Structure formats: structure tokens, C-alpha cells
Image (spheres, rainbow, N blue to C red):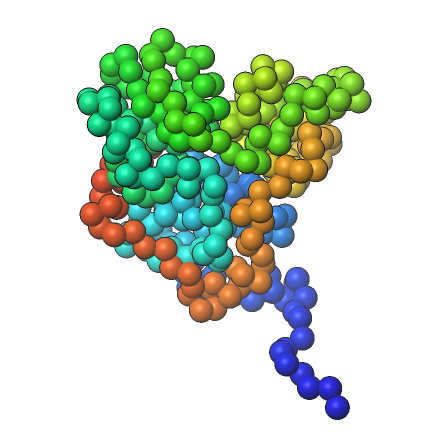
Length: 312
């Protein structure tokens, strides 16, 4: 006789039905980054890049935020909405780029350059944000840099994004040598190959890509910017230089257009850790809660809110 060790797997439809019911019961909102798997994107209340989701987290009146992204994003939501319950369906969903600088390292860098303001990419821990003057995202890095008084800025941790901002300002940026593993798999040779195959296609590249790739792009934009370009451009084909999760949204929003990833290697394993089942379990058990200590939260919130206020 065969022993049944667990309940049989549920269908996608039944999981989605249960998620939607629990969402109402928990007074929850589901936020999903554009890099999440398609099934998770499809059940989200809001899709977006880091900046868009930061704003949604700050504005929502829901009691519970289920953040389908990586940990620094859920931390940002918890910082902006300390009175809400913020859940991340997989607590191991991290960000190697965010791990490339610590608060202690940033304090050491600040000590070398007294009085120089710090712009930190949102892809950082709460502790690093707390040591910074203002945050930025890939969508607004240039605007943030140019809003700072003074001629020098410490920019952490993504070197490529900082280099892109440096090309659009007269200020001097001291760049931390961090980078995104996934975006470094976007190669100029792959774009050249894709252009030969699709000569009419416009090239969109994320500013975490290397400078040689960005020099070949028609549009250097965040994932939110990519959705706008795809919608507004008269082009019918696009070569997409970022994590392949964005392709699902681009196709859903623009079914009459074609989108080609530059490589099948453009997969962020951390972004792909969250599944429908994990979203369901998060709502069933109200796990895993993301909390930031008050002494860190208040200082980090000031840096995040300066960024959000600039957008207003």
C-alpha cells in the first residue's frame, strides 16, 4: 500500500482562487516587480520597477503588503509603511548587488570624504540607506544626482548606473565598484547579433548594463521606462537588454509587437524564487514578515522620502 505523504498538488486556478480570497480576508495588496515569473505578475495588484513600487507601497491603504520581489524592496515597503504588515513570500530572495556594500563600508567611505553627500541606489540594505542622504532608482538616478547641491557625490553601490549618471552631470561622482551579475550577462556581441537578425528593432537597455552596451542602446531606461517606450514608440520590434521576466509584461501590454531578449542567460535566480504557492503560503500563514528596527528605519525613510518627494 502506498503511503500518502502530502496532499496532491493544486491546480494553478485553485491556487489563484485561494490567493484572491485570502487577499480580501487579510486586506492585502500584492506588489510584483517586473522580473517576477509570469504567473506571479498576473495575480499582482500592481506591477512596476523599484520606483513605481516604492510609491505604491507608500500610498496604499491596505493593511498587508505582499511584496513579490527581493528583500531590499520589501524592506523599502516596511520602511515607508511601518504600521502595515509587509510579507515577502521567500525570505531568501536577496540581491547580490545590494550585498556588495555594507553600512560599515559606507561609513568608512564617508570618513574619507567628509561632507560629501551620498546617493544610494535603492538596491541596498536598510542600514546602507540609513547612512545615505538620498536614494535613487534606475529610473531617476540622473535627476537625483543633479538635484544635489555641491560638486561632489558618493554614489553606491552600482558602478554602471553611477557611470551612466556621471555622463549626464557636471558633478564628480565617486563610484563604488558594485555590479549586477545578471545585467553583466548583457553583451555587446549579443546585441550586434540580434540587430543583424532584427534590423528594424529598437534596443532598450537597463542602466545596470555595462557602458559598451549602453552606447549601443536606442533607449537606456528602467523596466518601468521599457514599458513606456514599448507602448509609445512606433517601432514594432524591440531588443530587450534586461532580465527576461520583463518580456512577459511587455508582450501582455503590447500583443501586436515583438520583443527579443539579448540572451537566455538573463535570469535573476533571486527574482525567480517566488512562486504562486509561496504567495499563497505567505497569505495563509502571514509569513515572512519584514521588519526594520526603528533607529535604522527612521534614517532610511528620510533618504527614501527625499527621492519620492523629488518625483512629486
